[in-house]
Amino acid sequence: MKLPAFPVEGGCQCQAVRYRIKAAPLAIYVCHCKDCQRASGAAFSMTMMMNVGDVELISGTLAGFDKAADSGRTVRMLGCAECGTKIWNEPLASPQWINVKPGTLDDSTWARPVGNIWTDRALPWIAIDWDQPHFGTQPQNLQPLLDAYAVEVAKG
Ligand SMILES: [Zn+2]
Ligand SMILES: [Zn+2]
Image (tube, rainbow, N blue to C red; front, side, top):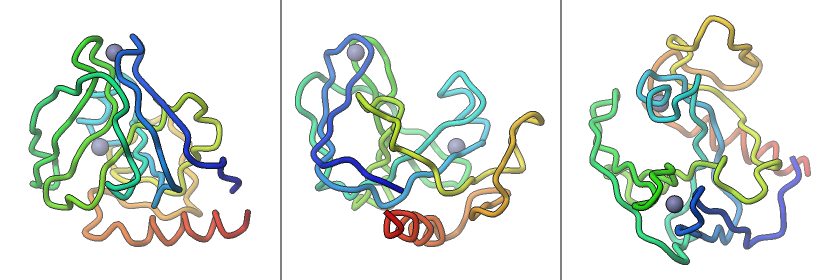
């Protein structure tokens, strides 16, 4: 999997929010849970796990709310205060991570997922790559997704 030269940038639909990604993600995966279907207004959401120090808000204001995830943990869901585009979320139990929505990258062509979670809730027409790490519900441990991403990045 080929990654771009960092830093790269992204932002919201109204262009008030701009952010910078300063290093490679830790993992990118797809979540099929009902909350992600609602939040995205689509069939699933994508999560790009980042070290919190590698993400920088350049402009704009983020607003959102604290959501009790299906896992029972609390996740702070943040988007542009002006236009509402979802930008990232902050898992409060894991403050070292920030989960960016890779569809908001200016160039999201390189942002490929390496696994799926909450496949029990996947819509019936979704084609899942079962050769990738996959979990029916919320995994206790995300390490298999981080490991799979590292393997793909190492392949170049
Ligand atoms: Zn906006
Ligand atoms: Zn989800």
